[in-house]
Length: 282
Image (cartoon, rainbow, N blue to C red; front, side):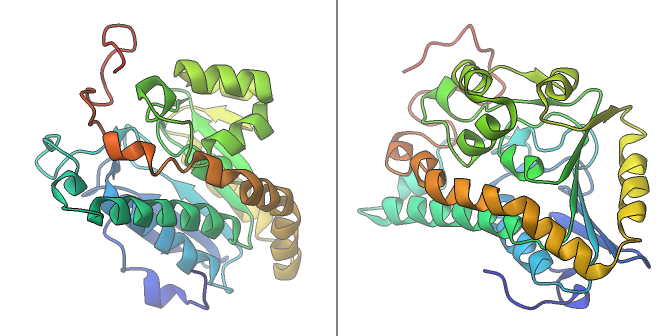
């Protein structure tokens, strides 16, 4: 939940999120796991919601740059620290209704993640530095979205693997690319390349991998020259319709009850990197 915060209080709080604050008031929020690409696990998921709450409560910053690290933005999901996948989701071993309460907690964090991103009251530049196949709604809620040439977007975690399209991707994609394209993408598991995302209107610019973050800093420094309150109220103007859309539709895609049989790869299904056309759905 958003409350008043200051950079010194949260800059070292989260193991998966590195923060850097420039003299101009530009905040860099970089996702990582041990200095490499982010491994999207429960801790990273929940901490991202809390980290965005801290960012949203920091009234001193003027611009936010949100970016991943290394090869992926967040296309490595569900692994243990040793790089292996667990045999079962942690809550499968929970007795009685504890499993359901654990899933409800994750749905709560998913709602908080979306609302906290939208509560960031300064312009947000998202840098998709590589493949993004889970929670793509996070970078797409930025005001300026940049992508590296090797990036792609995909909803790998939901419908193609037996779940209702959700986590906000069912909200953001129709808004950005239209209902027909969004439905096709979410139903088929299509990997939308950076160039296609540019043509479809989901991203603003595509750059070489080693140049995309520099371009974000260039844009951020230009934005930061504007008056502080102009920046804050402009972001509020841009997020108002998004807040309304997420309020209306987010709950339809938080498939808590369906997840009792699957998450992140239960129900007899295989890990996320399986081929789309060689493993039957169950």
